[in-house]
Length: 416
Image 1 (cartoon, rainbow, N blue to C red):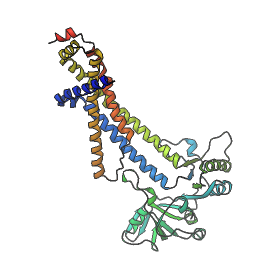
Image 2: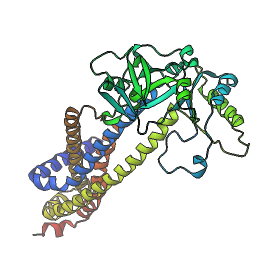
Image 3: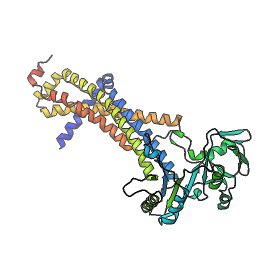
Image 4: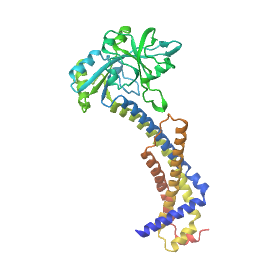
């Protein structure tokens, strides 16, 4: 064991001396590996930060919530004909969930008013295509909304269809850049509303994108229905009792299947999701991006590996007499094999290490220039990048090392 450790140490020193003696050639050899490692770490860091931002946004609404809509909550492709023809969820569906689901603590419904070719106005300030949403007073609790000023509307204001509104953080700043909005009036799609409250800023989206929740105008449900009587497409949100999320989902599904008269042999004609399902859907997107990234990094590793094999074959040819001398002095083929194999691994590992340092430096620089860009390097990315670079040296260095180990000592000593 001690002999093996000494041989390993000696081979590492020999490999290092050889690389130092041909620094420029060594750098060019591992350039492909260097680029592959930088690509792996940089892309994995940005995607990991992107995912964490989405997770923070989703969990901000609450991890015990259940969301129901007639369309998929996350959709990347074209909707099927069956999905497009689904009938809207009704307000009665929300009350059925409230009355028939013992695992549900709170349930709320909402509708969105069309914002196309409309605007919100206060004085000289305007917001184009305002996102007006009609909700019930308990929406503030189910959606974990936090008031920055003023208050939320009451059940009485909802029942009496009062023209009051609560502003999201972004639209409050846009319409009232220099004053307190509470108590002021705004024109929203040509109708007067009194601002009774504003909401605190939500966590920003990936790459510093504005959170859509900050662009909402929240008005009483029945007020919006009064102004837009044709709205029927509801979205539902329910908060499960503590520790009963799965039971709540099952109960909601069964109630909605009865409400919407879905036969026992038919699929649900609505979508039910939670924070975990939304995150899982986004993870599929991240996984696809990572798969592309791994494919591209593999190309870099292959290019680097071919360069390593080529330079190691040149090194074996240049040091043929040295190999013959070592064999004449008693070196075994396994010793020669180990020497050149370790040299290839050290060469690639140095390229991988330089790639890691460069990637971390680039991420720090980008983070300083673009603080809104979330980039957190996961340890698995570092491990994969470094292990991949060393693995390239092991794989592509095997043939040159084996060729060196098989040289005949007499022929090697006579080599010019």
